[in-house]
Length: 420
Image (tube, rainbow, N blue to C red; front, side, top):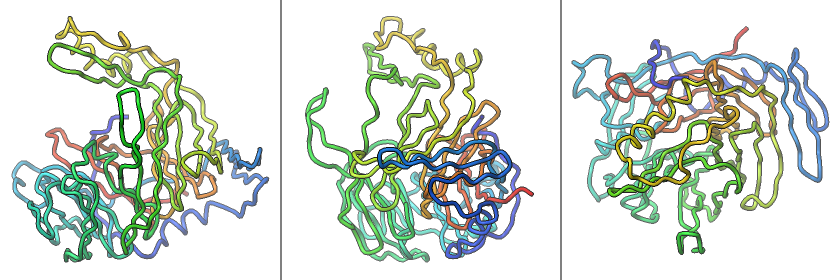
């Protein structure tokens, strides 16, 4: 599914953040009580629980309850004459929905947080470039912990704490100089007052020499919680997911399209959700992956990769090889997978629900699971950029970032609606 096609914007009120009424009522209307070792049928849809060796296996089959996303507001420049307006962003790195339905946008290039109302109108801006209180050397991510907005400045090595009105409340220190893509070097909100941030653990020996273990460190509105969660290593021995090429000028990396990837996301209470994207099977683990609590499975038919899709996915690599004929690559070229992956990515919302973006030829879909692994709803996924992760809200809202034809960022606010 293309991720850069703009939606048709509409404007409607966004309910306040605190009451999680919209999504709760929606999901409650779709479900009936379900105990372990039973099935919950709805038409041809059923969720089955089975305990094997102390691990709960949750299997979801059939067609789940339908829903759709309604576009509430689209924040971004409408025409080229909007140059210099608050909704012309230099580069969006993160978004979050705050109290009273306000949309908080981290503009990394301008080193500031811009706040918009439910109607998309600009309300206020805070933060600026610098090293003092309330200033940023980098602005990678923002998230809510209780009634405080946390901002992550990895270059400066600190978590900033703000009120909803933009008042600087203090800071927490982190490792400085941390770099990487904003999709992973970010804050992970997994509860109303539970957030994790990237950090460095013990040193270990790798094939490239000594390195630090990548971990996630727990935070709340009162500071660090002392909880540490290790990032899991994916299963070894599978086909490569990328190609590393060495030329006279540099080392270049290319992702093999549709190759299996290992995706993971922390959850509340020290658990991790992880999956190899080539199968719709998600493991819920504790103790750095040593203890498997639950396995969530979904039955979907496999889909083949079209010739045009495969060619388009490898075009950048082929163009580079044509210009760098003397380069050496490992492997020598991309191997075409037998089928498409099932999972594009997975996320855990602050209410603990699991959101899985499913890759389908007809267009990607979002599927939402409760904390026990029941599939609640399935609906078409809107276009979004790949660089910035979406944000979720307990009241049934999804925030996505996309780029228009001029590569300008837009923040789209969606509300989950039930289909009758």
